[in-house]
Every structure is written in C-alpha cells, then in structure tokens.
Length: 371
Image (cartoon, rainbow, N blue to C red):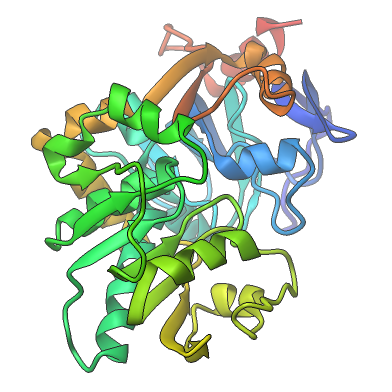
C-alpha cells in the first residue's frame, strides 16, 4: 500500500535558511506524511550550523540537528514510545524537519528510525543531553586517534595530545582522552577563546590545560580541530607534533580538497577515515582522518554525560540560552562579528505543558503558536 500523503499541507514554524538567510518562518512538509512526530525540548547551535548559515559549507546539509526530543507518536513500528526522550543521530539519512522549531517531523522505515533516535537516560537534564551528538563525534575522533597512533607505533600508548583550536569539539575530545590518561593541551590561533575557557570552565580540575604558548615537536598526537582543516591549521599541527607522531584531521574539508603541505587528498582521507605515513620537511608523521559517529559512540557519550564528577564541566560549556525566535538575529550578529560563540548556545523552543493533547492538536498548536 503506498504511503499516505498529506491532503492538506502540514505547515509548521521553524528557523530556516531562506535564500541563504536565517529566518523565523513557516515551512511546509511535502510528500508522504511524517510517521515520527516529536516535541523539541531544546536544540543546540553547532559549528556546522554556523557554516551553513554563513554559506561556508558545501557538503551535507544538517541545519538544526543537535536536539533533545520528546516523542509524541511513531507509526513505523520502530519501538519509540510516546513520552520517551531521544537525541538525533544526523549521520542516519531520513526525511526530517529542522530542530530549530517547536515541533519536529520525520519519515523513515522502522529500522532507520531506531538507528536515528537514541534514547536519553532517565533523569539526565536536557541541557546536558543536548551535548550527546557532539560528544559522540568527539568519542569517535578520540578512538580513531588512539587506534591510528598504536598502529603506527606498533602498539605504543600515546602520552599527550594537543588541539589546534579552543572550541567545544576540542574540549569534548579532551574530556574523552582524559579517560585514557592522556595529558591534554588546548591551543588557539588567537587569545580570546583560551581566555574564555580559563575564566569560565573548570577544565584544569579535570587535567585539561589551556596554555598560552605551544611547544614545538612535543606532542604524540595533534588534532586539527579548527572549523576547517586548512593549510594554516595543518602547518601549526606539524610544528607541534613530534617526529613519528600523529596529526589527526578533524576540522572540515571541502569536497575534493587536497593539502599541499601533506601532499595528499585531505578531504578523501578525512571522509574515508584513512591514515598514511608521510615525511614533511624531513619529519616522519602519520596523518589520519576522522568523520562522524557510530551508535556505539553515542552510548559511550551518554555514559560520560551521566558521570556526576564531569557534569559541572558539561553544564559550564553552555555559553548562552536563547528563544528560538531570536536565533536569526543571533546568527546575523555572529556573522557580523558583533558577538562570539565560544562554546554551546542552547536554543529553547516552546514547551506545551498540556501533555494530554493529541498529536493532531499539538500540530495545530504548533501552527498557532507564533505568527
């Protein structure tokens, strides 16, 4: 039997990119009706969201993918229960709406829905659970780094790691690598971000350092954790890594992009999660790539987020919280350089307190919430 199609268009409120400009607008769902409906409890503003909003991302579109959802209905047989809280894995392909909205809609088969939505542990606060997806990517990157290094050094364990940028992804990867006993240093090309970390987060209590200057050829692993794995960032990493060490490409790459410094196709290496041994200026170095996250990475991320001793740090990673209707203006100020986005911005959406409302009533409520 063919999937049901919507006779009357489902119209909902959302922050969307309209001709490349973020706007609080009305969106229309097209095609087969959604078989997964959820309330957006909170969303997170990701670095890739900023790239899309600023027109600097030329690959997959993921605008509004970090979110904590409360399931209202799931009609595909995927086993997701009404009232259950879940986070979204954007690496699973499905038709969906954005998380920058009061309501969330998706359509996929049962298996895809099970893979795409990961249950949140009971009792975990939303402002911590929203970190699950970026932390899962950090887990994946950290485990890739450890595996590449041990393979390249015939089983040696790394002693220390450095990050080339002082953003959220570096902090989260450092949290993961501290679990393996590595010394972690976070650097940045300008002083504002490191100063913010030193002044507003308890990183040092967890053995994560934010030094003012980087030592050359001192680190077993250097993660290129800038927004992009550009040549300047790779150059800094090459100066910091010791001979025989590992440079891991975490920051974004453009489709088909190559690196003159490394003499290799860096985009292909990162997306395929390959690793190669190269010689740069007489220094032998292993270069590896990391991309995305797996379901097991989400499980480990949620376990770390549940650890009481780490939760004060995770709470401190939230820089600001704004209503969803104010997101377009914030994005415009960020693009103009009028504000900074050092760590995590939470985007708060409308919470319907009446849990007795039917799904159809909630859809209508969503349409009537803002005009």
